[in-house]
Image (cartoon, rainbow, N blue to C red; front, side, top):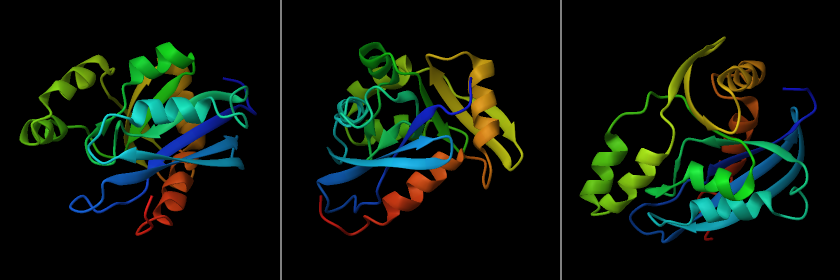
Length: 184
């Protein structure tokens, strides 16, 4: 993929799973490593609105014509609020890459069953499986739609500068942590 592309990185802010009903999603638009735009959305804890929130972000007037790829920190936000990668990609046409530092397990599926939200397992099944990738800082795991595997791995390696996650996601996580304790 050519240099100079604009990447929207998205992560959730910390929240109290016992008392918060809402949580922030933070989206930062980068041109390469330069931060250009900051966005936020509010989603329901354990809800089903993270996909629509991400769609609103990429359609925001400040970014809609600019975003060429989305990086997300995994596919679960605000507890058990699952990103439906396929629905997102089908509706926007914007490639999406979910990245984690830990190997995915059945933990999410078990949590959905414990929370009596088994219906969300269909979303897990529709999302592409995660693949492992060695970066200069360790192994990350990614799932993707809209780009080929070689392009995805090139992007992840190019931007894994300070950690095994792309720098855009690392910075988005830092910014999202600033919202901890604030009421959405």
